[in-house]
Length: 447
Ligand SMILES: Cc1cc2nc3c(=O)[nH]c(=O)nc-3n(C[C@H](O)[C@H](O)[C@H](O)COP(=O)(O)OP(=O)(O)OC[C@H]3O[C@@H](n4cnc5c(N)ncnc54)[C@H](O)[C@@H]3O)c2cc1C
Ligand code: SF4
Image (tube, rainbow, N blue to C red; front, top):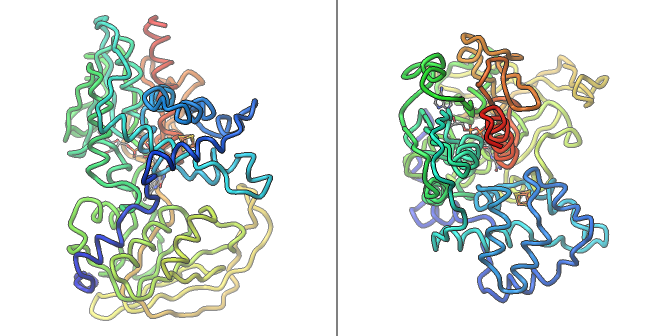
């Protein structure tokens, strides 16, 4: 493995991983910002939010000093509104559609205002929701990630007793184990999960894995319905020679390690190459730099125009001092005594558009080599194909297929979130959990 991280002091590491989007320092700041909102009648911000939060309403409530009311407006649409205020790529969602952009002015800081109210709700444990009395129906939810928790909360409010089975020892899914450490802390994630379950009727059973400790058949016998919110699976291999060498890691494991250990215990190289240009690649690159890597080079097979990350995310990597090689694809990892030393890449050019509508990268056959002591693979994730394919669940390449109701091809078994969409954002998974819950309620004849 690359050398143990002892380049930075504890203080430097804490500083590097501190909150990237700090909250309002004073209440006046929030009220002044809230008063900038012109309350557009057609609310493009609400339309651009996958959970349809009534943004003008909650901002108006903040402006009038009704912070509790604003928290209720947000959390009624999105029970992970606090987490989303820290992790949503708002530049392509609510804030990206704010009319101030057309006037070439700064959009309203919707996420920061959302954070202002929802953090107060969690810190003060405001009881904003009342659960109906138990109606005797039982639902099993697999996965305590955003989709599973949102589904569990919606069902519990309607008097259903929900048991969540989670394979890890903490809830939150990728919020806890994947999202960059400078966006959300493990402490915040735990507080958010505790806040969600404080409504009652939700029992999370940790270290319980579907396919290992429990089976779908058993759950179907014990519960009236099942919701699968298992997320997307493992990291995609590069399938190039030398990939097995010491110092080649996948981004998901690297970040999982970072999220579950002391920063000073995370091994990072001096010269790191990151393969990919999605959000996970950016997070792996920026966090390597923040751990003390001297050089971090991001390698992407298309041009900046086709990059999957947003401009804001790319800017974070630029500001952190990462460098970029566009139109290049990894071909071989070379090393000495099993340890990575070099990465050989092919120069690419753009060809005709592919199925994604973007121009496809074409290998020119021209090679170049860079010196590295660590390679982080962030070329996407593949669904839990084994788990899904071994069951009789209908799927496409491991992604679970569902009907408009959220139901799979198996009666009473619903699914949503990354497991179905192949990997989007937290806010999409929260909405998918709500949709699944709605389908389950209809199925059980409750709503
Ligand atoms: C590195 C990285 C960074 C990201 N950064 C952001 C970001 O900044 N902003 C953003 O909005 N989105 C981000 N995302 C995407 C976001 O985290 C996901 O879209 C979201 O978490 C999906 O929610 P989910 O509930 O569908 O799945 P997950 O969050 O993956 O939750 C699934 C849960 O199911 C559990 N599970 C899986 N299999 C089983 C099983 N067999 N038995 C029991 N439990 C099981 C898992 O342990 C997990 O807790 C990021 C993703 C990654 C990988
Ligand atoms: S949940 Fe995300 S997208 Fe929706 S309003 Fe809040 S910050 Fe914007």
